[in-house]
Length: 193
Ligand code: IMP
Image (cartoon, helix red, strand yellow):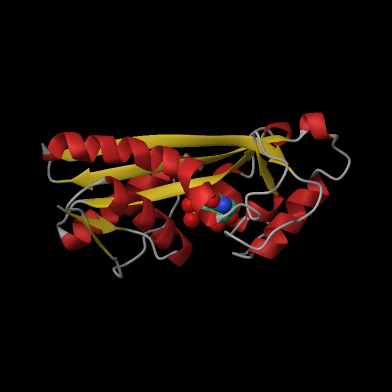
């Protein structure tokens, strides 16, 4: 089975690829270098569908895309779908600084947050979607070198270190992306048999 992975984000390609290839036997993930559509959806699902539909239209092959972000409870779920551009540009350092500044006076009990990932799969047989949620809280300062995006300021539930301090294998076994991919893998294994 071949699936186009409709993302230009190298971090995501490697995280998604590593998890999915291990979970679905005979799966071949193809890169995508076609046009990137405007992500103007109003939810993770709409944005994931926009990207997967564009790749399917361009390649004619089943295509998957994800949309993800960090939802902070005291900010009413923001940055959410605006996570990648929270400080205006696609600048992870500025995004993290802004989030930490916004929560500067917020005590630990009110710093609840969650990473959310929705994956859309679009192909000749129709569309499906899968969502994973990884709960935790926002740290008071950046820690750790692994991962990307908000990892250095996100402390997953059950841990006292940030996602960027976790071994990438540990993150990949429990993250929002891993949880969504687990559902996708179950689905792909079911339709393959
Ligand atoms: P997308 O590429 O439109 O899905 O934007 C996702 C954004 O959410 C990224 O640029 C990151 O800022 C943030 N994000 C999503 N998943 C993660 C993660 O696993 N770790 C850290 N940040 C993440």
